[in-house]
Length: 130
Image 1 (cartoon, rainbow, N blue to C red):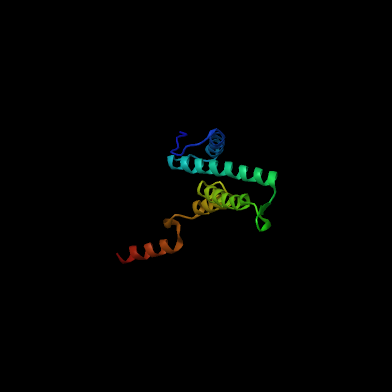
Image 2: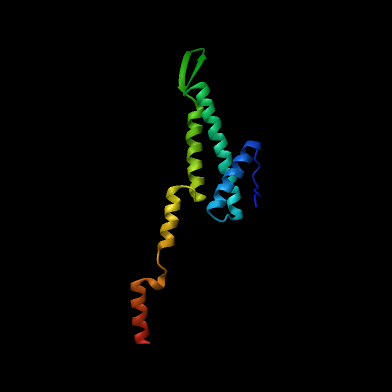
């Protein structure tokens, strides 16, 4: 099951399969996970491209106009930040981050309603009346 509705290039496809394989070792994947994994693969590719651009060109861009020289932050910096946020959100939705894994563990540790002492006491009281 590696069907996604999102078109991936060759590099993104390799990343997709790598992430999918890693997740399959941790849990059973649902069909709805495939598009999230594809989006994660795309964003990882964008992150790598933005990082390569920053490495090659630096964090500042110098441009020359009729009014003189201007120096501003590289557009790759903003792209890098946006991509990091998207990756973090996708990792949370796929239960890949420590935070999301911890939240799932907390939910699994919650006792069922029947084991709750207050619920048990209320049920016992209702049984005595009825």
